Length: 333
Image (tube, rainbow, N blue to C red; front, top):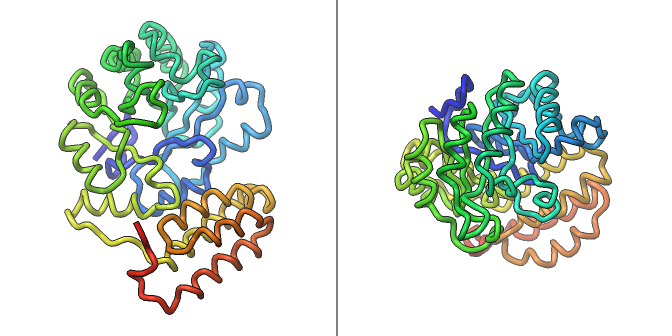
């Protein structure tokens, strides 16, 4: 069992906090497929402190998602502390996570996200200030370094531990790599060996076998799955089952994919209004249909949908269209 502070997590499979994706509708769906811990998408400390309406809506957590880690980001200590205090007292999140991994320029230019990776002393200062201000356990998600010349992963993780952080999630890429190239699991192993708090490994976990290999090769306490779960919560379920039983379960049928896609859609509509939810669901639907033979035509039509009825009609039509085919002909790649 993975334990972060006093929060007990039933298995080591963790959903990564992905911006623009990990709202309550998606998190709950993944949680129901067995994730031990789900993480909310990163939320601006400034938006929280200023009570921005959109930001406040992002703080919503369904009790069924728990345990849940809520991630905040920012570059100014006082603002980050105030945001953390609000999350601590006014949300039902179990864990407060600090983002030190986001590589996009609009975040790093504000001295936030991956920018911290260049300054271990700042990491200690910021994390210790948050830890002192809140009761919930504080964790950090970071990358291994800024670029190949500035890889301070071990030192940075040690600073998180020294500051009172209860766990660190390490993505085995640099900021310069963004999401390209290969994740460096050797660095993740070095981090695990250098600290006594739990370490969660992240990067290049595309299959259940990858998850087990990461756990075996690096010794990490948990494995974080991000892009491989997009439109594919079965990846979470199959990974949990593989780690627990050694059995590799099969891929879902087209009907199963569509049914869960529609469930996800309805949860998103309940979370946001229909027009916004349907437009946001277009990208998720493309992910759900990935690998389904002949999906390109349907995807193009989906990008024109503005109502639930239009989208569901297209999806149900796809199920009917392929219903008579042998299942082995439906999933490709």
